[in-house]
Length: 497
Image (cartoon, rainbow, N blue to C red; front, side):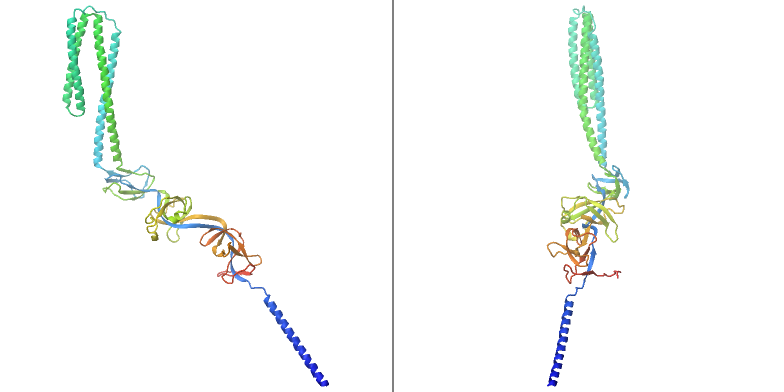
């Protein structure tokens, strides 16, 4: 009995020990599992980008053709022969300088003939002006004599009755002589007009002038006889009256002579003016045969040589002002809508390691042109419409060659000294874009941001970040969550240890 009780006791103790060991094992396992489950997560390796201030801009790229300021190709104003080219390629020129002489023999002959016509008209007009002066002097003398005679005293009145018959006969002679003289003078006036038109010879005119002189002499003889008769008829008074009549007629004749001479001057003055106007017209046409510079600059090219025959509109030579350098563009209509005057421009020669030059947009046409884009090798544009634009360099480079093609970068928008980030940092999966940043505890946190100017690889951050922050480039796997521990990955070539 005791033996059985002893065995039973031993058996119970064994079970008790095994139960304790099992309980301790299960409890230790559960404790270890709990520790494993509650362990801190491993940090995720990410690339960090320090937030800094920088510049950002939105450009468009075009190609253009270099031109000098005022660049122009002068053309022949007339059909002519190149008489002499007076300049050389590369020569500096001033405005108004003669460049090429054109020869037109026919117009030179016409101008010479017109000059002779003017000289003849001047001589004729000067002759008539001298006649006016002479006639005015004659009138002044006649009027002076008449006035002096009227103021005199003549008392000879005794001979009037004795000479009445002789006086009447002599008066008839005077009338006949006056008729003959008037007819002769009228004929002389007509012959002068015919002579001026070239219808009669000078001898005929001089013959008629002789007839007039004879008629005048006859009239004077008759009047002299009357005066003699009057002197005999009346003493001083009759003599005074006759003399007064003679002087009065001379004054009238002199006045008529003045009027006629003035009429001749008035008639010939418009003729001279007309001839002079025609001469100036022909002279200007001949001056057009001299090609002159319209700007201060340099001769860029000469397309003709001495002796070449040219037609009106033939290109002669090209000028430009090297102190001003321009670039002519043909913008696509899409780009033209974005370009405005005064926008900054960078110009460079097409090729590797080319130097850049600065400039500004000077003008953009408001009218599109159809056809191939001049100065642009983009064959895809084909016959698409383009918009002409001009860029002016800030200073002459002295290296760009007119007619050469250059690369043009027009800065549409630009921000300087602003927060700039790579676009790969910006997360746009939510309603508001945000950036993952590393906080002071080394954990990832969301930071909402406001974006500004944006180009293909960079974007401006107007709010939400400041210089000194560390932005996180989100890894593709695993995805980040707020509070996730992160650590910076070492990049290739990083010397940090």
